[in-house]
Picture 1 (tube, helix red, strand yellow):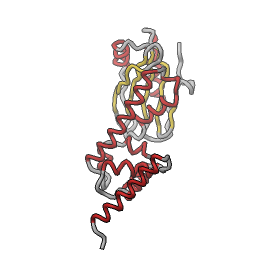
Picture 2 (picture 1 turned 30 degrees about the horizontal axis):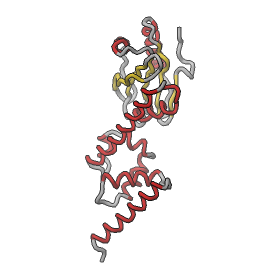
Picture 3 (picture 1 turned 180 degrees about the horizontal axis):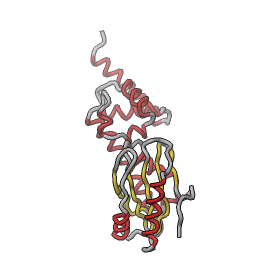
Picture 4 (picture 1 turned 180 degrees about the vertical axis):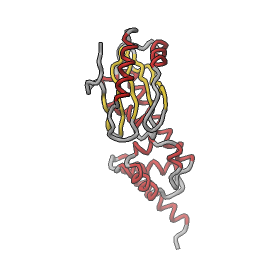
Length: 230
């Protein structure tokens, strides 16, 4: 007969091996998720749960981007674990914000793309963000301009202009998502971007780009030559 203390000993041994493999750089992604779960759920064997979550979300990044409501809908995930994941996600977001505020955002485009994915990948509704930049293209502030529905988010030109003036921003990057993977800019996306370019140009504020996160892809309206600069 297996005693509770024997089960606990086996779990502790397995977790110690996970930590050792992590320190040696030998953990697979699903094992990293398992290691994370051991800190959120210290008194349970989380091997089955980690594999179920990894199968459902496909990556740790998508799991961390999930909403609180989505997380707790999973069997085995309670409030403590959901908040644990969201705290990790917030720390990642804050770290990238710091990096983008220390150097011109386009000097390390990979970090900018990662930041965009961190805040928008996996969202089930559209969000529209405005990244306000200084004259060296360093991030002043990321403002969540609006949240909408599965295929729409409002954009208020006057509010974007007012915020730019309040923050003394000289450059702007627009950012939004399409919850359906692989969907590029719509005509409405480009029309409102052009309207903003025209409004901001009168104040010598440069709308540098409009980025779109759709699944694992990031589209750039500037690189796609969809914008008409004066």
